[in-house]
Amino acid sequence: DAGVIQSPRHEVTEMGQEVTLRCKPISGHNSLFWYRQTMMRGLELLIYFNNNVPIDDSGMPEDRFSAKMPNASFSTLKIQPSEPRDSAVYFCASSLVSSGGGSRYFGPGTRLLVL
Amino acid sequence: TQLLEQSPQFLSIQEGENLTVYCNSSSVFSSLQWYRQEPGEGPVLLVTVVTGGEVKKLKRLTFQFGDARKDSSLHITAAQPGDTGLYLCAGYAGGTSYGKLTFGQGTILTVHP
Image (cartoon, rainbow over the protein chains, first blue to last red):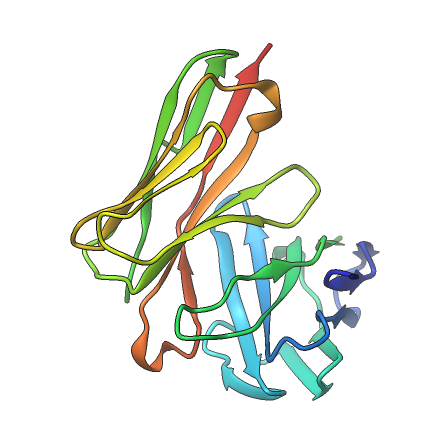
C-alpha cells in the first residue's frame, strides 16, 4: 500500500511568494495532520483534520498560513506571503484515530527554503 | 499545556554500547508512542505503550511506560550504526484530545562503527 504522499519534496522560493504544499493521506484514515519541523522548535503541530473537518488550528503561526481538506484524499497547506522564517520541513501525517490516539503515518516531508 | 521532555538531547556512542533515552512529563498520558526518524525522512512509529508499567521489546529495543503513565524510557542494547537517527516520544492525553499527540523535542543518536 502507498504511504502518505507529499509534494513537492523540495521547494525554494523567494520571500513574498505563495507556497502550496500538497498531501495525499493513506486511504481509509480519518485524520490528517500538518506538522512543521525545525532544529530550534522540533516537531510542531500546525493543524489537524478529522473526517475532513478542521478540529484544531491553534498551531497555525499566523494568518499567512491556511489549510484545506476538500475531500478524504487530499489536503493543502498554503503560505501567502512566505517569509524566510517559514523555512522548515513540513510533514503531513495521517491516522486512524482511535481511543489510543492512533499511530501517525508520516509522509517524507517537503523541505521549504524561503530566500 | 502538556509537555514531554526528552533526555539526553544528543547521544554519540560506539557500536556495541548500550544506551537509554528518557521521556518525562508532569502530566498523565493515556498512551505513549516512540518514533524514529532518519535523515531526509518522516518519523516512523516504533511502538505504542498504553498500560502503566508496560514493557515492550522490539529486537534490541526495550520500551517501558512508567507506572504512573507520566514517563517512558527506550533502552537499546548493543547499538549498531543502523540505529542512528532522531528518536521522538509522543504522548496522547485522551479525552477530548481528538487524537492529538504531544511530541518531545527528540534525542539525536549517533552510533559510530
